[in-house]
Amino acid sequence: MNYLTAIDDTLHYSASAKPIELYVFLDPYCKDCWSLQPLLRKLQVEYDHYFSLRIVLRTPLPKLNMPPVCDSQDSRPTNRANPCFPSIAIKAAEFQGKRAGFRYLSCLLEYSFLKKRNVTSFSVLVEIAARINLDVDEFIADFTSDETMRALQVDMFLGNEMEVDEAPTFVFFNSNIEDEGLKVSGRYEYAIYEQILEELIGSQLLPDMPPSINSLFNRFDLLTTREVAEIYRITEKEAERELKKRLLKQQIECIPFQDRTLWRKKQHNCSLIKQHF
Image: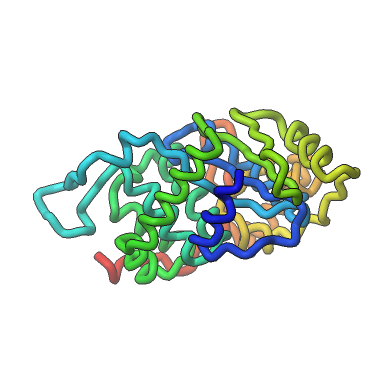
């Protein structure tokens, strides 16, 4: 797969010292990609020192080719909606850093599958950017930039070259550029991805110590009680007790939802978006 060199040059990508390159192909319209988020977060917390992660969008072409429509008769950009907008928004967020792009994707999936919001709407996408504390003005500028469209085209090219037909799909590359990538389509148990990493590295995996809970919520926007318990290897009851301590200090907020409890860092300023609309 020598095409990777050309692609990386296009993106001004610098090679990582980490032994594994992990490409994760996701579709913002795919419910499996939403449910994969806890696994990806835990993988990053425990084994981030072994791999560099790159999120690649694999959005069906019909969604990317549909013409814009308006939410109302008002034709201002803030009232537009388009099925391709979520993919464009994720790439625009990535211009503020890989971590910002991942947090934006996670929050977008939350808005779509949890809150049932219309994520094809430009105004909702800007609201998400404000929600995760991106520079909203920069996000809006990047949303309409040629660089963002080129980044999206590169994602499409990567998917075609790696013969990725579905999302989610993981593609692992080791440090030997002559070796073929290992493609894993679909969603599996966490232990399967651990086993693949271990086989590619050739030695036993040594997980990182988890960060503090405050640092965890600075990194990831929304976590369940179960996720926190698994990351810190404690019971859900112990995790809930620790989370409630921070709830009382108004550091995080609790969102009961169906059969689970969700937690996120408390927002102390909700007026960030008002100036843009």
